[in-house]
Image (cartoon, rainbow, N blue to C red; front, top):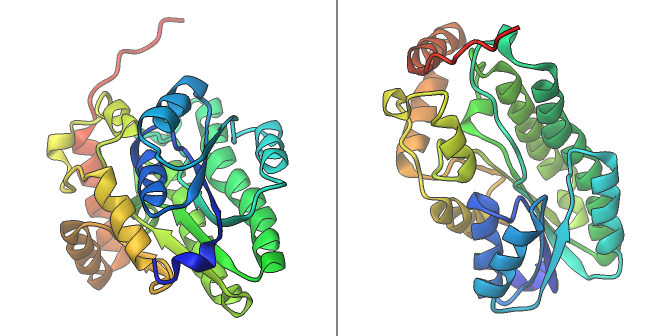
Length: 268
């Protein structure tokens, strides 16, 4: 981080029960910050807090896809000197748009759009009041381009990416550093779940290490507005940006469609 003192005593990390969020919590604690661990699974959060965190940790079990869960988080951190917010909570869907159940789309929009908007605004207001701080939003390379066969997830991640990049400009004069992170495929619990519906070996993106994502992100905070962790993913996205957008979306569509694993049809 550019200026660790700027980010205060406490960091709030959502999605901290596993994967990228868990690595952010561990690495922030290694840098001396106290961490608020947020996710739905209280047991997983407690294991991380007791086994991996060497500073003070606060566990909040909350479903951030719901207004009640978001309100609970904000109430629980009201008395803490929070100077850094890392929003890593998320879910994903890969498959034909017409096959996705409505509750899947609602969940994607709730966690990536509604929760991101409400929590980022509420915590930004607190950061302004304390004189500065930092925000890290975990988007995806899927949010950088139109993504057939992952259309709603890609669009939701595009929202996060565009919001973060806009706020990096808007909040700069308030001494708030905003970093948007766009990882490729990552070895996480969500990545394992995606492996049940797509053949990961047919994807052009390698499955990266969540520890690398967290490390590169924290190193970039205060210096950059947007990063794509991992050299191979950076190269892929740079090449894609040089090609016509119409070509890129067709190529991504072919890649994802060819990787889909046929799913059994539910009986009616």
